[in-house]
Structures are given as C-alpha cells and as structure tokens.
Image 1 (cartoon, rainbow, N blue to C red):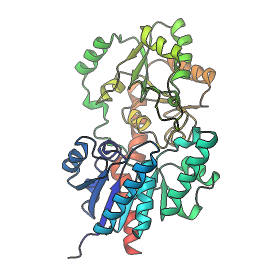
Image 2 (image 1 turned 90 degrees about the vertical axis):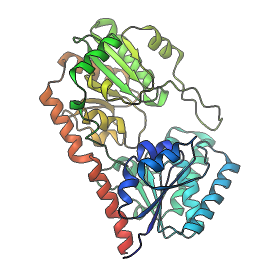
Image 3 (image 1 turned 30 degrees about the horizontal axis):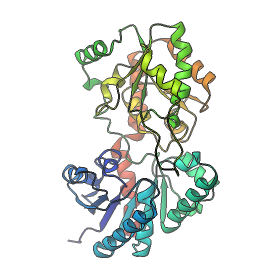
Image 4 (image 1 turned 60 degrees about the horizontal axis):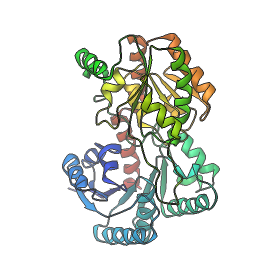
Length: 394
C-alpha cells in the first residue's frame, strides 16, 4: 500500500482552524497525512487535534507586523518543513501565508498553496499600503499556486498586479470551506426556542427584525447601518435591529488603521430600545431564525461566511456590492446589493424589505436551496481535493 503524501495546513491562530476550516482537515486525512499548524492559543490547537483527528504542531505567530517574531516563526516553520518533508503546504490568513510561504519556499516544498480570503490592505493608505503591497507580493512570489476564495478577489489581485494570472485559481464556486447546511438548518430550532428567545430579547411576533452578525467595527459598515436605521426607527416602532457580535477596540499597533465606531454610533446602540445588542454568541442560528433580513454593509470581504449562514437559515440579505457578497447574492432572488458606504441606498433597501413584511416560508426555502446547491461543504471539499489530486498526478 502506497504511503499517504503529507499535507500541512497552516493558519495564524487556531481559532481559524477550529471555525473557518472546521471539518476539512478530518476529511482530507482520508487521502493525505494531515498536519495542522498555528499558534497554540491556550490549548485551542490541542482541541483542534481532537476534533479533526490530526497531528498538530504549534508555532507562535502574531497577527500584527512584528519583524522579529515573524523571522522566528519563519525559521521554526522552515525547520519543521525540513523535518516533515511535506508534499503540500497550504496556508490561510495573511500572516500564516507570508511566513508559511516564505519558509516553504526556502525548504523547497514542491507544492506551496495559499488561499486568499480577504485583503485588509485595500483600506490602507500611504506608507502602510506600500509596505503591505510589498509583503503581499512576496507571499505570492513564494507560492506555487494562489487560491482567491472569490472571483472578485481574483480580479482585484490581477488589477493590483500582485502576481501573474497563471498562479491564480478560484476553486469551485468560491469559499474556503463552504457551509455545513446540516448544522445551519432552521428546522433544528423549534417554536418554543424561538418564542423563548424573542421574549428574552423583548421582540414581539409582529416586529420586523433586521439582524447583523459580525464584529461591530467601522469596516463592517456599522456606522452607516445605524445612520440608516435611525430614520427608519423614528417612523416605525415595529422594527428592531439585532446586533450579534462584539464591540472591538481600536488596535494599538500604529501600523493598523483604527476601526473603532463613531462615538454617536455606540451611544445610539446602547441607548435605543429598538436596537438589541447581544454580543458574541457561540451559536448564531437562534438569532438568525427569529430575524427577517440580514443586513451586511461591509466595506470589504473575502467570501463572507455569515451571508452563507443566513442564506442557509432562509434569510434574505441586504449586502454591499463587493466581492464575495455579490457572488452569493443574486439580486431579487435571495437578497439585494447596494453600494458600500451609501446610507441613502441602504436605508431604501431596508425600507423596501420592511414594507414587504415578513418573508413567507416558501421564499425562505428557495433562499436555503440556493446556498445548499452551491456552497454545501461536501461540494467545496471535493473541489479542493481534486486540486490536490492534480498535484499528485503531476
């Protein structure tokens, strides 16, 4: 029997392995000898090992620009690759991509793959943008293949001339890991759970509920969403805005742009009874199932999981017309697209959904099937596996 070829998957922090790539390492272990690497994260990496039934190797990495720590991480990864001799190194997240691809290049790993799930540098300016562009180009140069997880990202990479087109490929319909439609299924939340959560949050059956899921930061379009909702709430008392996610403080690192919300935005969220902020939640499904429409006015995305999650739960979405979102959302079928940072058009879209009232169950079923047919995890995993198998055959 031929020994399995070795595959190393790397993310900067273990939470990315545990959530963004959940289930994929275990699936791939039927075909490859899989090793997962990331920072240890207070035992999270060990939990990943048990969940995915794979070997793990910790290597400390930072998410910020820290030259000395980054060099140390590159050296440790290089030594690991020389020892393990992987056939494929596949990285995710920006920092893991940079140090992982550089180390794999130096260690002469034959197949060096990096998935792009977003480009935070697009919002950067001046010297910071120049630096981040240089780092991005270095990452791509060290890789043998670059996988943007959306067609929009592919076009942005080409436009910015980060690498040659022959290195780029979008796998399947996009997405890094797809969505577990057996988990994100509205039928798993029964009526008693819905009623109990509504009562707990002070939401009436007659209320129309807009929901946002994600970090409460500027780049997610929260300032614009609150500005649009203010006007709507003044005229309609039967509307609620449900915010599921944590507030995030401004990063201290001077190389990162402040992403804090405006003071007026935070004050409105905390003081207005029509806004219900529940913070970070381990399970967002109950909050999606009691809602009527997802609002996702983000400035930039890779391939947003929350839009897929909402769709799998049968929710229509108002989203920014940006890469990723505009591949998941088909206008007037499972949602609408608006320009990012545009308060009047966001307000108009929200008012349109509010005036139409609650979506019927038949419409919700159609929305769910659109996600299920394109992005269910088995479809995405098989597409990635085929890409690996091409490398083996080559």
